[in-house]
Length: 63
Image 1 (tube, rainbow, N blue to C red):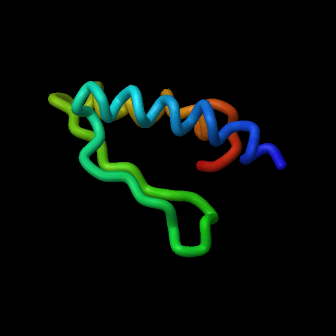
Image 2: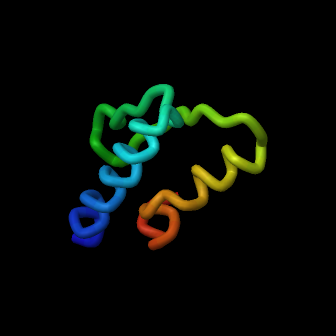
């Protein structure tokens, strides 16, 4: 399953952003079909960049 291949880089990306103070909260959905991340950003452009660079979206695994 492709999601299992993408999860480690995705988690690494979120961990890196969290260490930089850019993640407010992140949680998996109850059915593990995905999750939700709340980013901390100074501008809309920064928020968009954080969201667009998530490996799940970049690899078109989940949108």
